[in-house]
Length: 201
Ligand SMILES: C[S@@+](CC[C@H](N)C(=O)[O-])C[C@H]1O[C@@H](n2cnc3c(N)ncnc32)[C@H](O)[C@@H]1O
Image (cartoon, rainbow, N blue to C red; front, side, top):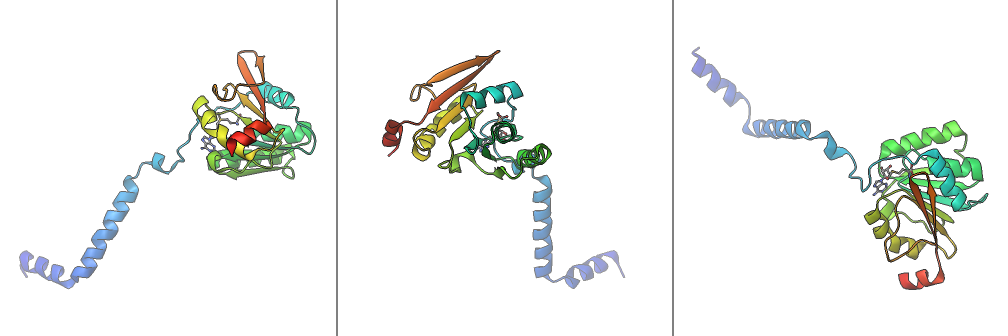
């Protein structure tokens, strides 16, 4: 048999529908293989930079976290703020972070600290969080993220709830009631007032 005849026979042996299916599968595999790893990582509004432990301690002291109170850390990273609130202040805490790797670390750290009964870590977007049960909200985000979050805090938090932020304020719309310095770090403190609830309606 000539090579041309052999090629013709092998082509006609495979039905066109199967050839089309094979081509589609190949294109799909190539597309998946060529996809950059970064495309699968969550698009963070703030990069991960942990708060130094002395600053965590100062934030919780400024917020005067008491036993049994509920603290939320939005963008909780490795869970250090929530875990410290549970371990040193007897609070219960919730940490929310968009990055599943951070949540896995936070859960491992809670286990090591023996506070798993009093803390909960969840993968989620802080802009979709419900913080209405919080007595205290802690933040280490960025100025524009804080400002975008401000209406959500006014709307959801109860009167008397406290908000503490590491390094960044809330802009001119919500000046802090107190400001504390620790070395080169600044901690800002606010409380929710009836007028904030009214303005959020
Ligand atoms: C500067 S770190 C602060 C970590 C921790 N709160 C602390 O003080 O150590 C900011 C965290 O926010 C998380 N993050 C960024 N964008 C987010 C979003 N839209 N929703 C939830 N978490 C987010 C990041 O993954 C990161 O862990």
